[in-house]
Image 1 (cartoon, rainbow, N blue to C red):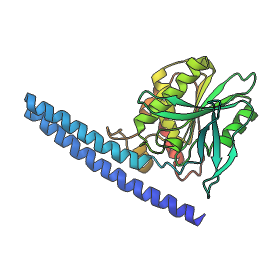
Image 2: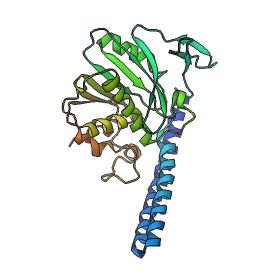
Image 3: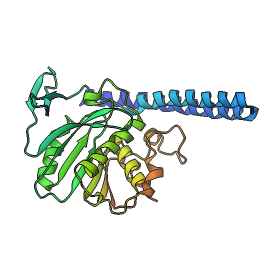
Image 4: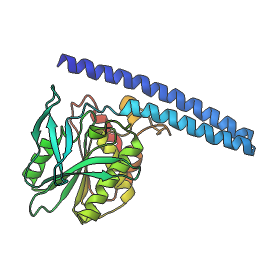
Length: 291
């Protein structure tokens, strides 16, 4: 427990430093961009665009370091002789294959995203299930670590449960996770349910835990479907910067996962659940989400 607390302390200390760096970078960028804009001229317009892009790239790099903590992969995917994919969970210490995921109704596959990533995903299907839960997992984990929990969720609730990986996590660890990539990742997962599995939106529940609240809320807000079955936010965040600076009133342009500004656009029922003693994403993160 002591080591875990030290790790949490170090992560929060680093996050605080990065947030401060982002704030300074954002303030400098605002001033620099406004200054270039005042000069005018076609040549300076090009310079303005270049500055915008350079600042965006720098801030995106800071965002990635701040928000994402991909762990060592807890699983691997292998192709059988017939071409089907198999999912093996790895031993946490030796990192060798420990167990094959072979539950009834389980299938694993890869999804092609709009940005070109091929992210792993799987689904537990239950006979005569009325609903399908699309899960966006929390930080510092992956779909291998969550596999047993999602299997139990499907079994106990008698629902289909689908999970997808974030670009940069699990078997996609060679890539860099970004906020934008998580949005395209969940978009590919949702498209799979609707177009490949022919699941109507009225039978889909979006479930986002911790950092997974970001892509979940973004997708639900963009869909604008009143007939989406529902959204569940588990230990969600109001925005990335508000985790460290909860007193922020206005969302900065360089903030990440601005859920507080998007959730009012969701038209379907929303359930927020949060641990009252959560020290990573305090309960104050959920209270101001709804006006």
